[in-house]
Amino acid sequence: MPVFAYKGVEAGGRSTRGFVDAENARAARAKLRGDGITPTELTEGGPKAVQATAASSLSFTLPSLRRIGGIDLAIATRQLATLVGAGIPLVDALAALSQQIENARLKTVFGEVRDKVNEGASLADALDQAGPFSSLYISMVRAGETGGALEQVLERLADYLEGQQRLRNRVTSIIAYPLAMLGFATVVVVALVTVVLPQITELLESLDQPLPFYTRAIITLSDVMRAWWWAFLALGVLGALGLRFAIGTERGRATWDATKLRLPVLGRVARQIATSRFTRTLGTLLSGAIPITRALDISKHVTNNVVIGRAIDTARDAVTEGASLAAPLRASGHFPPMVTQMIEVGEQSGELEAMLVKIAETYDDQVETSVQRFTALLEPALILLMVGIVLVIILATLVPLLQITTTLQ
Image (tube, rainbow, N blue to C red; front, side):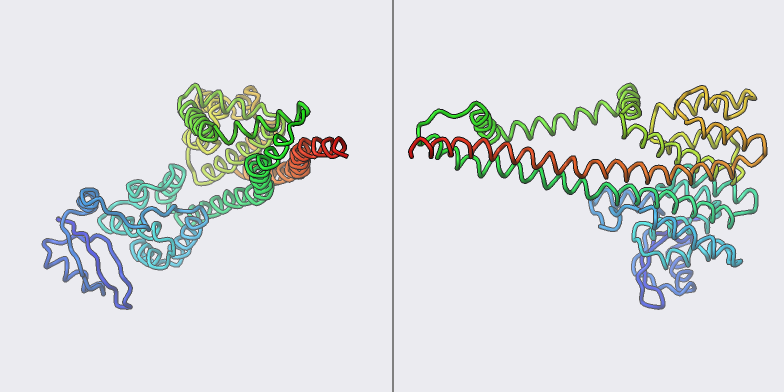
């Protein structure tokens, strides 16, 4: 049966769009009017044809470029769980959800999901075809549909997404102030070296007096920065692009991730964040009746670290051969003893899912504490660095002026 893409107006005057299947355009319009939608535009061909038309016209809309935030997806997931739990049919629940979502991009995506489910696809398959949903999300929904526990699975997914967003917000809010201070200090130093210092330099050179070596060094640095600023800028851009290219390779990414884990303070924080993400994701998947090998394969990606991901791969292979999960994780050396001990206790007691969630909650708190301690040390260090640089510049210009004043007197 042909599929038509439509744009129309609902009974309340709200614009809407989506897809409808019908024998012909006339039947499609009648079907839309029966659903309370007045069509304003109708195109045969379905999603693929619409995408091709959009690509050929090189047109785009701002909502299509908007990013789907984690909190938006968490709210939508919890709302869908509530609608499904209330006994509303899935297609109607998706239709109601797509109308009340505020994020334009997510609204469009769930509209497409509703149309695919209406055409006979499962919710998991529709989410997979929609695009922006992770393998964890799709696997959990598929398990919920298979086991007849879609509402519970959606609730767990919402809890998981909210937990990840809380962790991200904690870290971001803590490091925002030190980053702002660093940016301000950089602007002040650049302004002193490129604007203020050259004016004082002209005065010192006009007096034709010998200058201390540190003053000459500061003046030379100022001249170089003003004359070759474009070279420094180009070097910084090329360096960033080169680093990004190197990290894009398998060997470069492994080296970069291993280096991050070896850093004195940041390495510990990175390991804690990876451990929290891994344990929370694995616990969520296992509670959704996902097989442990599949759950491990999905969980390794959320760590965002190749080195830890390889350790999880080794653990998955060992579990496939009949070993416990705790033993290969302990042997890898990338997981703290407390984590492997708690996993071992969870395996022995049959409460692995709950134990993994408890580990994640513990490490969320440790991440917040570690980041707070780091920023507590970073803030005075940045202040002292900025004061030191400004003091050196002032002394480099003030001392010669005092010497010249004394000589003239």
